[in-house]
Image 1 (cartoon, rainbow, N blue to C red):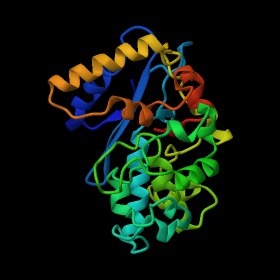
Image 2: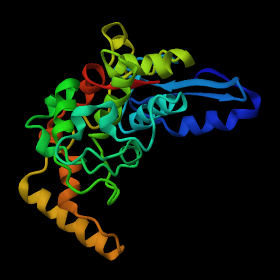
Image 3: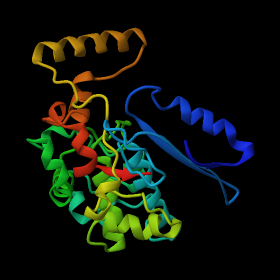
Length: 271
């Protein structure tokens, strides 16, 4: 294990050790500040199947944790008085007001109540998700699946463009990545907080090891899985539209995505 840990925080070292396989590839890093003091900075394990060590500055792909980062950038603008939670999203992003969304507020968007959670109707291929401007236009023009504020529905993919485009427009940055650097990464001195990894940082990105690809489900397997999910949710008393969830969680082609290449080519790198 590389790095250092304050004597009062040795439990973090042991917890990190449990996160990494005893045999085979896999690694992790963690940094903890307590009352302004860096008390933990540790890295352990490997960053690829060849056994290269996972270093303190190694980048790892993140998934939905990027939502918290995006929301943090927006809250910086809210604290500055540049964005109001109860203002319509269209005040900052006029195109978003299309198809009955003119009254949708920033607060509703943050709370996953904007009603634009369905990703499948917006793309034909998974690769289209990598074009920020095109996806922002599609989200802006999307017809909501339900009225804003009516019910919470996890905006698994669309949250990034929905909140990130507001941030980008208010800041006036060319890209959301640059806006994030201005609002969060640079003020905090974070070299590893990236949405879209620049060429000069690709060498620091860890491979995704283990499952090389997401499993590909045929129609029969997908139908059986949906049936099992419905029955399980029903027994738990949960009211969930499984088919609607698929529309939100599974863009076309996602089961064929190469996860090992995703971190280097398309991923949101975070330490």
